[in-house]
Image (tube, rainbow, N blue to C red; front, side, top):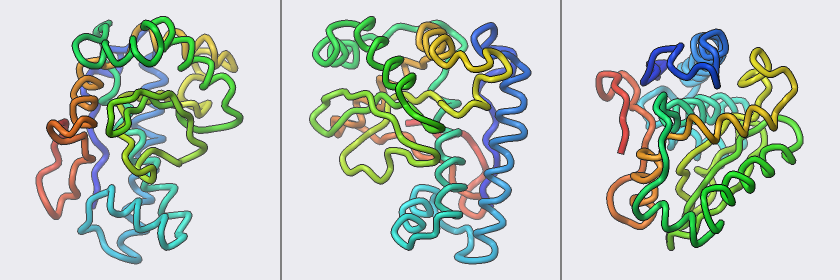
Length: 221
């Protein structure tokens, strides 16, 4: 059985960019519902002795859209929480140099990230990713889709584009939400570790294993 991961910060820690009310409903209700449905589906079918990554890949391969959607959304949200920090950070080291190469500077990355998110039609996610050669790219995925099915792609950061992520705080102002999120919440230390992993130095983040394998702890690379 997969468990709902605890947040790595207090629910009010991301204010004013993300309110305690939004984080409570998003994590304790919305994310929790994906995890519960995921466990129900696994119990009724293949069991829960796999990594969540392998569940997602197998569900995609077999065309089990309901299992894929719940598993991928559970993974996406868990990654989203660890990709944010209550401290305002700035990129440094290798990832900062990669940002300069790909976007000119951090403002160039912000423009690309916000523009991609605003232009994305409907629900989904906007990601900062790196390929195996270290090239950074901003991309969006629809609904539950993520980067696990994209060979050679390592996610560094992600922002939730579903309306439940920002509607209580900003109503339909997705652009304002994305701008404020980018300025205040990215966990650049985490992104730096993910970037090094993309270069083959260390392991990228994996979702915590189900209870059958280990006690439920947050796992970060």
